[in-house]
Length: 378
Image (cartoon, rainbow, N blue to C red; front, side, top):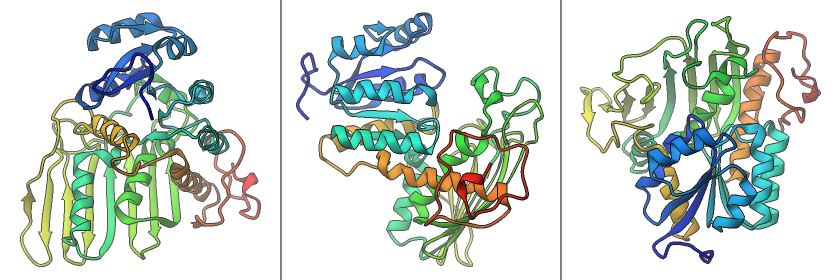
């Protein structure tokens, strides 16, 4: 793609939409990226936008997306806003023939995500979902270890999520207060990261079985989940998560939990400090030394790693991961998790049609739902 008017000679001009809690991690990431720079930030809450712009040394803030796009003529738009705004923002981006990165949760429901992916294809522009967990350095290293054959044949993956931020009536209020009122929380907001990461490490998902719970009565959605995955390869996976308990870590949000990745040659373990431990079969466990990324910020620098990947992809240097069209499979698996909980059955992914209706609450749970018509799943 050719540079727009006003583009820096040394890279792409990026406009960021949204000045909420997570935008700080995006802006920090862009400062680490070569070949791009942030030209402007947009948010209707000008006080928040100006404070964030000042913190990161951004020259300009806007209250209106269209005005920003027409004035700045960016090469790429980074959308860091809640799902309810994605359609309106992205339609303006696509109308101007611009590629975009969009935060997750992607769209308000599966049907809207599907429509947005199709709209990007119709506009012939790239749309990448900002699914950054797979870009955390420990997962990139685990993938490299698998590709090098060091793990052998992958057998199982297990992740125990314990960020410890969800207890009591004040849960989430200091950071993302809307978590309290989300009708679907843990799976749509957090476990979706591990659906994607599990697929990145183990291949596609064949079927799921899930049981969801709400441990904190102060919130609307689920905050505890046990999800069993069957992969096309024959391997298996377990996501065991709740947001109330914590784990051994100086910062429980660095990895948000612990992972065990098992193969025919041994077991790789991730601890709460981002360290990887390798135990060869019938041998002693030892630390596997690798670059764990940043100690500060989010996920060892995962946002910047994703953004750098996107710039390289747009420059034709590597295939883009997590395009919107590819990401729909993650959302299909996510909806199968909710369906499995609702009906108490194993759900095979191929052939499963996610409900077309808008997001429905997890509770109360019906035990009489039929799988013959997916539209009946609450």
